Length: 452
Image 1 (cartoon, rainbow, N blue to C red):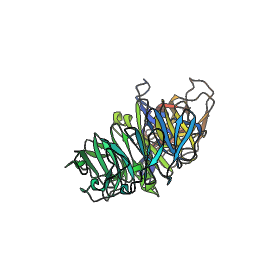
Image 2 (image 1 turned 60 degrees about the vertical axis):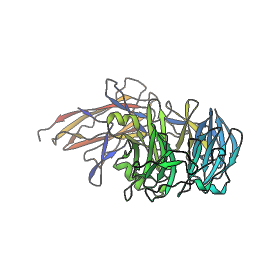
Image 3 (image 1 turned 60 degrees about the horizontal axis):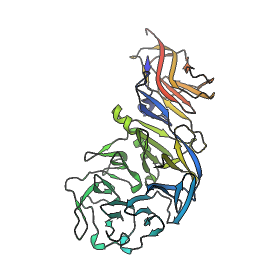
Image 4 (image 1 turned 120 degrees about the vertical axis):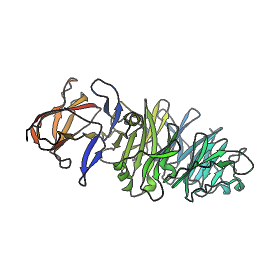
């Protein structure tokens, strides 16, 4: 009898709840063993230390740039070069690319890097800067109330007569972005769309009927993925969730477990979201306080359900943050130190710390009939370095047995089989944990049915 690996279940507060795997991501593949597998998430390899904690980065004009602490730096191989100083409040920065320069919104200020120097926009009509984007020759920012555009001929100047506003819904604007060549005013409870019409005043016109009644909690809680927006937010008087903008509507893609994580975050303004593309797979990664989760985007589409997994480093927050694809690698900062590194699928450690992995398999239920559970096998590929995997089980979904270890002997044909030999009156669930690189494809049991 086969049991599912990719849809874990646990009991919490007297009800069945989804249980997301830890540091194992979902992958849809026809292997002959199964249609999918769980694979270890990439590790992070350090290349050096920067001048501060990483606050995000970008790839511009064939160069990799990041903000670390209060410094703008360039990254080339393992060389991290300081380019200039900007204001820092510790939060992530926003980046926008224009002609001959890119913009950085940092600590409510706007800066430009033109390839040789870092400068701040000091025009008093700019106001505070919560976010920045670029569209149609304009750098566009917001101060929370107005949509502000720079001058076409001089991006360091702002004309207060060209301010715009999003008035369909009276909520504060938390950010700005671009989707399908339309400017998006990202409100706390709405997404309002504008089309570039030019003219002497504010050059963007509201698209009637295109408003979406869901918004993000901050500029750092949205990201672009697959040509659209993913964001953490809600509608008016609704709990937080993770949403994807699709065909003019906001689709909730988070499940109850992820929504609970967001609700329990003590400082919602610290929640961030990022997109990663590794091979043929895309990921939406959400960081909320001490916890991080990721959605396997493409596999979720094929499975027609959200496939989430938890991310963690050594019983603490997940450290690899702010991935930027540059020079054939995903460069990431370390959320706990000034270290910079890159994601490596051949490694599992996060900046030298082995995080381990675990999963709860789907519950085994024999139509309410009892059975003797003889064998439990987890088929897949395991490390050949002599590492140990640990098995435990539950017969009610809530209380778990002591762990049983199984040490690998380095043989690639070694099967991972546990023999509980216990009676199960109703159901059974299985948990497996370990370390190192694995690919878990299938779970099987041998059981002897009972008449009673």
